[in-house]
Structures are given as C-alpha cells and as structure tokens.
Amino acid sequence: MDDLLDGLAAAVRLIVTADAELIAITLLSLRVTLTAVAIACLIGLPLGAWLAVRRFRWRRAVIATLNALIGLPPVVVGLVVYLMLSRSGPFGVLGLLFTPTAMIVAQVVIVTPLVASIAHQAMRELWAEYHDLLISLGATRRQRVLALILDGRRSLLTAALAGFGRAIGEVGAIMIVGGNIDGATRVLTTAIALETGRGDFALALGLGFVLIALALIVSGASHWAMRTERQSRW
Amino acid sequence: MVSLLPLELEGATLTRGGRRLVGPIDLRVEAGGITVVIGPNGSGKTSLLRMMHGLQPAKGTLRWNLPEAEARLRQSFVFQRPVVLRRSVAANLAYPLLLRGTPRAKARAMAEAQAARFDLTGQLDQPAPSLSGGEQQRLALARALITAPEMLFADEPCAALDGRATRAVESHLRYAGRRTTLVMSTHDMGQARRLASRVVFLLHGRVHESSPAAQFFARPETEAARAFLNGDIVE
Image (cartoon, rainbow over the protein chains, first blue to last red):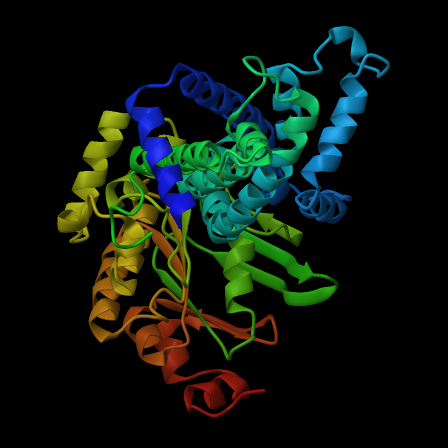
C-alpha cells in the first residue's frame, strides 16, 4: 500500500515539477505509438473495409491469418525485427536498429492485424445492413466504401483505439529493437521495466500512473472529438 | 421524355446456389397503376421484386424501355425491413440526391420539403436509427421517392408496422401511385384489395394468374387463386 502511495506521490511530483526527463520520455512514447497506430490505421482500416466488401478466392484464409496474427507474441516480433534490422540482416545498411524508427516498425507489425480485424468485423456488419440499399441507389464502388467508412467511423475509431491501447502498453518488442537507451529510445514502458528492476518502485509507479493517464486522455479526447455517447442510441 | 416502361420479363429466373428462387417469369408491367404481387409464403414475391429491380442478376430476359444504366436511375426500392443509414433523417433523405450529383444546398432544401410531405419535419436532425419502426419505413419511402422515380418497388412495406403506421404508409403509397408506377408485394389481402389496380398471383415461383384487381377479386380464374382468396392453405 505504501508503495502505491509513494508511487502516486512520485507521479504528482514528476508532473508538477514538469520533470524534463519525464516529458522527454512521454513525448517519445506518444510519438512512437501515435506514428505506429497512424501507419497501422492507414494499412488496417482500408484492408478491413476491403475484406468486408470484396469477395475473392483466398478471403477466408486472409481473415483467418489476420485473426491469428493478433496473437503474435510481441517479444517474438521484436526478435524478428531485430534480426531484420541488425547489421548482418537484410535491412542492416539502413542503420535503424536502436532508433525510434525501429520501435515504430515493430509496433506497426504488432498493431496492424488488430486494427484490420476489428475494422473488418465492424465493416462487415455495416455492409450487411447497407448492401441492398446502396446497390438499389446505384452507388458506385467508391461511394459505397465512402458510405461505409463515414457511417462506420465510430467503429473504426474503436479499432484505432484498441490499436493505441495495445501499442502504448507494449514493452517486449520495443525493448529489444529500441534498446531502452537513455535519452534516445527510452519510453514509458521500458523505463517502468528498468526502474522496477532497479527496485525504484516509486518512480516506476509514478511513470505507470502517467502511462495510464495518457491512455485515458487519448481515448477520452478521441471519443469527444467523434461525439460518441452523446446520443442515447448508437 | 422517353418512358422507362413497359418492363418486359421473358423467362426471367433467379437462382441461388443452384436453387430456383423464382421463375421462369413472363410478365409485362405497363406504366401507371399499382400492381400488387400476392401469394403464399415462399412463393417468390420478394425474389420477383428484387429480380425486377436488378438487385440480383437474373437469367432470361428483363427488358426496360431504356438502356439499363438509365433505367436504374429512374427506379427505387423500399425494403420489408426498413434500411436507414446511420445518419440524421435529413442526411438520409438527401443521400440519393447527393449520389446523383445534386449540389448540397439544393439536396438539403429538397430533403426538408420531402420531410414536410412525409410528416418528418420534427425529426430532421434526429439520427435515423433512433426513429420508431413506422417512422423508419416512412423515411425509407420518402427517401425512395425523393428522386421522383418512374417506378417504385415496395416489398411488403407494412409487414412490420402497426395499424396507424400502416395507414400512413398506405396513404403515401396511394399518393405516390398517381405519378409513379408501383409494384408492391403483400401478404395482407385487405391491403391488396385497398391498393391494387392489378394483381399478380404467384405460386411456386411462377405467375399463376395476372389480371386487373377488380376481376381477380370478383372472379379468380384458377382454383389455387380461389382457394388462396378464401384463406385456405395453398401448397
């Protein structure tokens, strides 16, 4: 109990004094995760919508693979990305290992299947509802996808938020490919792991509270921006 | 302007997965009037309407008096279970116009005028899915008619509605029927008698009888139609 209170106190102290290191770590966390989620959404949302609307031969296999990929262990993703980016790996010349870019790459791999799968689920339900009407109204393929995205935007937001939630709290992969280098690739989760290992529970908890607050703020802000839950229905 | 109608079906058949849903159908729909499609459950009423509207590709011949692309733009469909977009009532009404390239301001004005006609003015800015079933079907009908189609298909438009909502939808259908050729299906014989100018009696996916309403209800030609009108179970 004392540890928790100390942690809360440490969090308050860090925030009130606008601790430079905390701010740098938090900003890097946000930068890596938001970039990764943005890229994952660019790939995953259209992919999900496309899988819902189009019928092709390997559709079921693609969807099953996608759902299986959600369960990818981040540590293994980290390992594979590490091997790809390491000096002897195929992308070694780029010199990306132990940079924020490498962390973004790993998170994109982890988050994209989740975003695509949730988007696909939502778009499939909406498409089933809209299909006959949009055909009847003579909507072109482009107009159909636009209608789905526009009217399904709340579900797509949910998909993006789920991706953000998974990425912001992820530690295994970014620890491996980022290296938790002070001032370069240290983010909230890797810092928490480090401080816990060192036995500085107060600081670790303080960082933990900041992390939770961050997740809540981002989720709240996007809900507010999309004006969900303002009406009693949907 | 060249008329969309008549619509001619020759041996038109709709199948799904090797199973015949309706057809082969030979039928001619002339301009004007309300054609009511009746028949027992599973006789293919819905499939016939969907086939005529082109929601599913049919085998055989289905010929409008216009090229298909243009014919599509001049007809609308109202579904048995109302389909509303997850948008405001106004946005639902404006949507078919926007798809056809009507400028936003004009579409909005037309949507407001249509809402007034269909007693939906108070709900214009309400999300359409929050409307009651009757209001949703009224909205679906208003949206289907906002493009001033020459031909309106309505598939059991009152099946899920209570008496009051049915009365409202019927009066709109009757009014629409003055300018628009209407083909609707129903399992409600009272409704068929109230609205029909022509009756198509379907049985086992085939047109069993097709005649003017007055004649059909007074002197049905076939045994099955007679039995159906008597309320017997027709197999």
